[in-house]
Image (cartoon, rainbow, N blue to C red; front, side, top):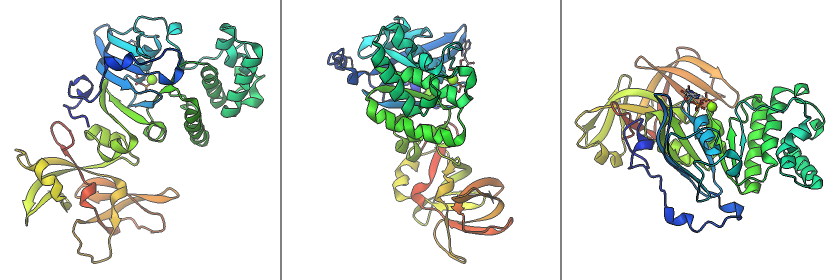
Length: 396
Ligand SMILES: Nc1ncnc2c1ncn2[C@@H]1O[C@H](COP(=O)(O)OP(=O)(O)OP(=O)(O)O)[C@@H](O)[C@H]1O
Ligand SMILES: [Mg+2]
C-alpha cells in the first residue's frame, strides 16, 4: 500500500507503481490482448500552472482502470495525454511497450469517448458510428455488422437513421460511445461517458459496460468523478486529487484500507465520519476518546500507536458500521447518539445524529422508526475504526 506525504503520493519513489522495462520485450505487436499503458514521471504544465506533477502509473494488460477524483484534479488531462491530444511537458508514455509520447493520436491505436462529445450533426447515427471504419476503408458488410452489434449493446438500434439533433442527451452520449466501440483499437479511453444519463439509464449502462468489458479483452481507462461508478466498474481504481495520485488499488483495498483521509472520505457513500480524538492506554487496552465517544481499539493497533509523540488523531467511522445496541446494554464500544434528522431512502434510513457537537451519519435498517431527538445506542466493532494523523492526514 502506498504511504507517502499527503498530496505527494504520485511523486514519491516509495509509491508501488512499477515500471519494468524488461517486460516490454515480451509484447508481441499484433496480439491485441497484451496492450499495456505506462505513464512515467508525467508532468503537465499550462504556462506556469502545473496540473499534473510527476505522475507514475502502470496499467496492466487488459485491465479496466478507473481514474477518479473531484472536478479539476487532472483526470481529463491525463486521459488526453494518453490519447495524444495534449502534449506532455515532461515524462514518457508507453502503450504496448512502445514509446508513444510524441506520436500523433492516429498512430497510437487508441479510441476515446470524450467528456464533451461532439457528433457530426449532418450524419445519422449509423454514419456517425461508422465514421472511423469508413475512413479506414473497412468492407461495407463488416462495417454494418459492427455498427449493428454495438448499437444493440447500447440499446440504440432503433435510432440508427436519426440525426443527432433528433436524439436526447443520453441517446447522443450512447452514440458517442458507440462511435469509439466499433473501432478495433487496443486501448479504449472513456471520459465520463455516462454523465448525461439519468439515474436509471446510468445504472443500466454501467452494467452493460461491465459486461462489455468481459467480452472485449481490451485495455480500458475510464474517467469519472463518481466513486460509485468507479467502485462498480474498476478492476483497479486510481484516486487523484490536485494532480497527484493519492492511492491506487482494488475497490476493496480502497474501501477497507484507505491510505489517507482524502481517499477515506472520497470512497464510500454515505461518506466516512471524521471525529477529533486522542489515543491513550487504559486498563491495558489501546483506546481512542473524544467528545461523545470512547472506543477500545484492537490490540493489533498498539504497535502503530506506540511511540507517537502526539496523542491527537482523526477518527474515521463509516456510517454502515454502527450496530444498534440493546436498551440498557453495557457493551464495549457503546455510543449514544441523539438523532437530528432521519432520511428514509428505501432500502435503509440515513440518520444524522449528534456526537459531542459533531454531526455523524449513521446507516440503519429502514424498519426502525426514529423520532427527532430520540437517543439511540450503537456498538462499533473496534476493527472497523480508522485512525488518521491530524497533521499529515495519513492513515495510521
Ligand atoms: N487548456 C488549459 N489551460 C489552462 N489550464 C487548464 C487547461 N485545461 C485544463 N486546465 C486545468 O487543469 C486542471 C485539470 O483539468 P482537467 O480537465 O484534467 O480536470 P478533470 O479532473 O477532468 O475535471 P472534471 O471532473 O471537471 O472534468 C484544472 O485545474 C483545469 O482548470
Ligand atoms: Mg474532465
